Length: 446
Ligand SMILES: Cc1cc2nc3c(=O)[nH]c(=O)nc-3n(C[C@H](O)[C@H](O)[C@H](O)COP(=O)(O)OP(=O)(O)OC[C@H]3O[C@@H](n4cnc5c(N)ncnc54)[C@H](O)[C@@H]3O)c2cc1C
Image (cartoon, rainbow, N blue to C red; front, top):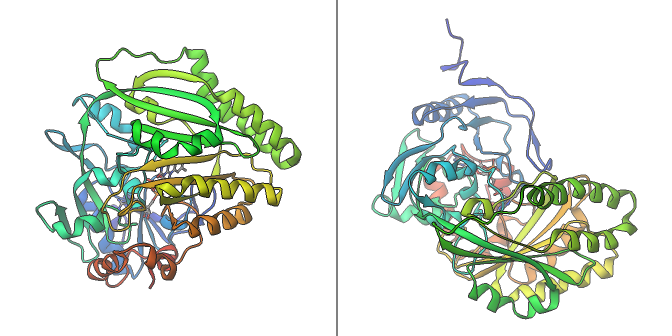
């Protein structure tokens, strides 16, 4: 006979084990781990948590740096609930446990693509939209802006359909729901015809890039740059959309290994370790990294250009700002690093997105620029992140919900005009806080 725990079979429910996120900044020990392979099993897991008087958190790929996915209640894993559920022209419905790295194969057979992506593909679709994951591109929004419909398993154990025609008023809240409104069961994404990307990466003087920042973002499809602290130049990346039948011009296999694996991942680990033992080596090594990593030009499929592997673990804080504030904010961070005498190995990443109308989007109501600071995971990021955060906050900054920050509900409310509307939806859909955890209590309130 199959064993059961409070009505769930042993294949669905197991005792909790210690869980860590990718960045090793969060550790949690849930009471139970539940595994759902279908929409019905998701509802069963929600009912189990309610009956047991426990909270429930769906965990995606654990790629958030903030403790947004941590729970000591029921940790729900829906990674086996993946793949395409329906196709209607360019509208594709995915099971919520689908990972972004599955999309090129799933969409490729349909001749479709995502219009934009962040810089990795390990996340689940549900996890990525829930925290407002974004890529770069002045006229492109984050992943959540591409969602036209979704289904939520809510705290009362029912399925709630949200689309442009059903419960449409909930769509701007549910697209970036922080996991606070229910379990995302499926998501319908407006895709675009498949395309190729032409990518140019090169080193340019940082001050020139900052002086021309607004124009650069406005005149190309996808622009971003990295600045290695202690250097005077930026590594710029410019991606341009090309038709799907454009011939590929990928890098040679050796060059691709050097650029994608050895330099950013292999050599980088050594540099980061050396930076800890001998901080004085960081400025010259950053100048060397800057020279080694730069200068390449490829044409390849959308997914191959947007994303790359990240095998060096790090911690990250990222803030969105009104786009025009980026140059002044980055210069202020440069002065701070110089004044404090810190040795920072990891580059600072700068990106942009279009404004959107999702209530908790970091780009809500404003064309945005993003500044992300990182530290190797064996270094303590506290002081660096706290002081950079103080600067970015003064530039009307809003923190990425999935990355490290110190903000609270009281000081986030003024940053989001629809904050209280989101809380009202939370009160309606999860009055007993079945989906709460400490992080949500900090950023949304009790
Ligand atoms: C190396 C690296 C690179 C990154 N690059 C980028 C980038 O380019 N751009 C960017 O914006 N961010 C980036 N991030 C951040 C990352 O995209 C987000 O933190 C994202 O939320 C992680 O997705 P996940 O599947 O790991 O979700 P998790 O971190 O596991 O969970 C995130 C949140 O989603 C909730 N959730 C997950 N599944 C469901 C569900 N089915 N229903 C309801 N809630 C759910 C969780 O409860 C939690 O609240 C990066 C992170 C790393 C580690």
